[in-house]
Amino acid sequence: MVRAANVSARTPRTARPKYSPYRMEFLAYFWDDLDDLVGACRHVATSAIAETLATAVPFITTASGMLLACAAARLLARGDLARLLA
Image (cartoon, rainbow, N blue to C red; front, side, top):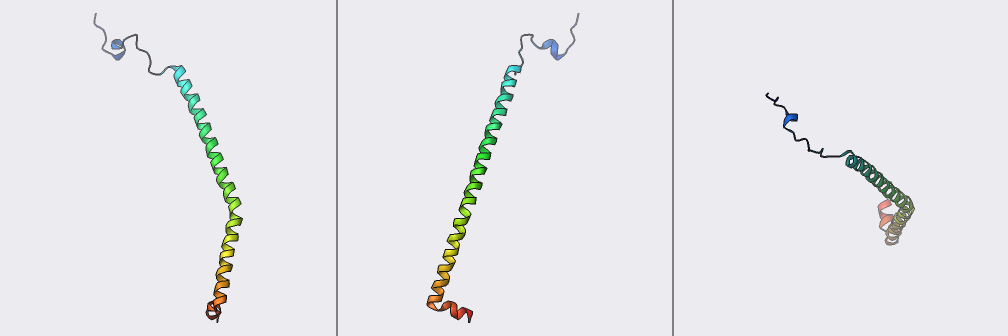
């Protein structure tokens, strides 16, 4: 009697699958929790940046306005601005 030459005839019966269903389920849950954690961190970082920029905009505009006013006052005091406008 000759056996058919196929893969299943040569595969040992004691071979276990590489990945058990328990390990795959654990990996799926772990991956899902890790994705949730990364999403939460991304949300916190984005919110913090948005809040910081919303708070900083009035200070930035005030500072730039003060610098512009100081530059104009200095030019007026020296008479350069009057010559430029004339």
